[in-house]
Length: 149
Ligand SMILES: [Zn+2]
Image (cartoon, rainbow, N blue to C red; front, side, top):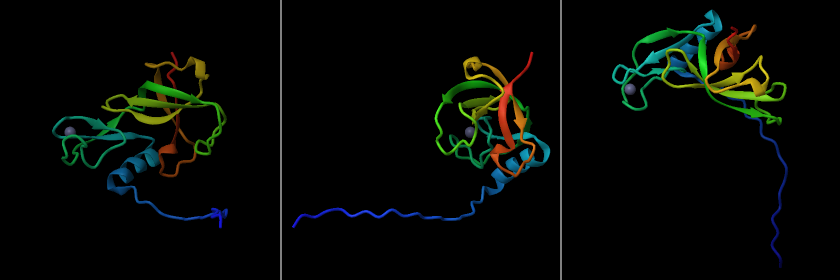
C-alpha cells in the first residue's frame, strides 16, 4: 500500500499580550506622551542604547543613566522594498533605514519617508516625524524624513 501525506488547511488565531518591560515602557511612554527619544547608557563602556537596554550586551552590567536624545540622526544603511510583505502596511515602495540617532552608539531600524527612494543616501541627515495618533509603540515615530536645508 502506498503511503500518502494528507494535509488540511487551517487557521490559528492566538491573541496575546506582551510586556515590553520597565525599560521598554519608559522609552515608549516618552515617545507617546512627549515625542521624545530617550536612550540609556552603560556605566562601563559608555555606549548609549536606543532603544534602551536593561543590560549592556557586551559588559553584562545593568545600564544606568537615562539620556534625552535629539530627534535627528544619520542614515547608516537602507533598503527599498517594492513588494507587499504584509508587515509594513504602507504605500510601496517602503524604505527601511538604520538610523543612528545623534548621541546614540548604535542604530535604530525604522522607516524613511517623505523622500523618493533614489534620493536616499547613506550619511543623509534625517529627523523623526511623529505620528499624529500615538499609542505607545515604536510606530509613534511614523518615519524619519530628510532634514531640510
Ligand atoms: Zn557596556
